[in-house]
Image 1 (cartoon, rainbow, N blue to C red):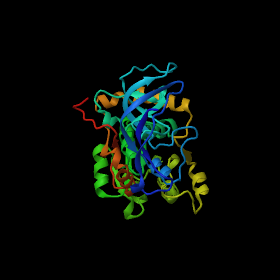
Image 2 (cartoon, rainbow, N blue to C red):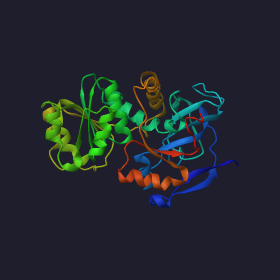
Image 3 (tube, one colour):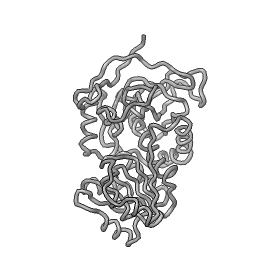
Image 4 (cartoon, rainbow, N blue to C red):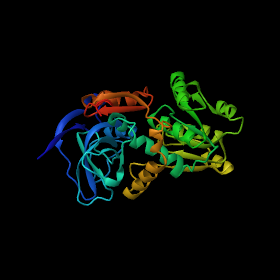
Length: 338
């Protein structure tokens, strides 16, 4: 039986207790391709899965990793999208990316842009598709609208800022330090507000000339409900895609929603069905992917770790000190080598 190196962990373990072990290499199912992984990345959902708070999808790999980039080494005889052996691809995964090989539905892979290295590509699918989904599929973003993006220096946040700007709308952010705010402003954010300095409501209202924002992109949840509803315009939309600030609400949330006709739009990506993901990826390929080669968009990378340093990568994610993506080098690559 063919084996591979992969991240292994016990549910509830600390980052430093994660290990790299030899495990069976995955085998193809109908419609799938096999990717030799060059790079993967760390996402918040994976730290939650490690802690036992976010279970893997039933019937899919329990190995961590929701995205990866590499080269195709095998294709099933039945594929819904045509690929060739040796093609460089990046893929949205249900799991399994933190390993030397991963299988994925052929419709969930995208060609790596010519301007991008395989290392950079490993951090594109999960966060950029999440940002694209919450802005356009769920949030129905329109040109000229004002958008408040929480955790603006995160992987999703830095992608969302660029996508809002690409859509000719106005991105504003919250973040936890002046350095992070300055960094995200360099990506196109019009203004930023340090949540560690207290309520940001008056600052958002001042920055929008008292109008407020049309759309809030929120991974915080419970602890931000009042501030979110305060800064949203009448008929505003609140897209909720995380609960870092808790799931419980204490207060008259429903009254605020009713009085301003605010829509709450919950969104996840990991648990969406295969066809939804295929449609999302197809739309992203058509409308967004070319902007990487034109330099209108760029990957934002905090740093990369060797696969053996997976514990350090998780610890960094949990520290909230990163600005942009945390990558894993499964096979060391450089742009020059490619």
